[in-house]
Length: 240
Image (cartoon, rainbow, N blue to C red; front, top):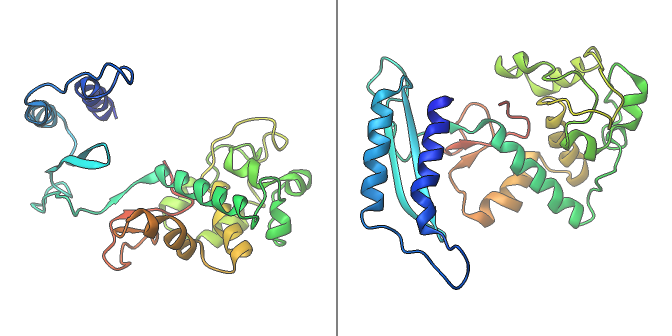
């Protein structure tokens, strides 16, 4: 993690001259920027202990640099390249919340819709929290359920519907809306909620409303990575 943070800081430092200080005084990008960045990144990666990574730089909507480093798996010779599959973890939450926002704007959902209205069989250990939980709460991590409930089951690829049923046993630490407690399982309820609101699976709605219009033809949402060779996993409940 420290290595990635250092890379991010280095990238921002190198990219900074390419941005505008204001609309009247653009700052010229230094000569050899890409070569300098590539050299810096190559040296940093060689000193790291991570198996591999991929980097892309986008400027004004255009990819100006993309490169893979290292191997996909320790001890194997399969290199990382621009087509390597990566799990993007909790970055997928941004896709889920934006998709929910689109449906709110269209009137298919409302931020203060109660979860039990859309998912009548859903329950938490505390009946008051169950009754009061809304879409707004689950997307803002204020469900009151103890942090990271059943993350181990997500990592073990237990079917999500089974994990949701176990939320009936999860400790409830706070009343709904009163305290931030980071969630993956509770956040992932947006998937079945979208299915209930639209009549289509979350993956289908995500592809139709976001991925296809954005040209993200290489992304997928299933955990096996088999969807038409797509590249980046975007489940609603991806874990950090």
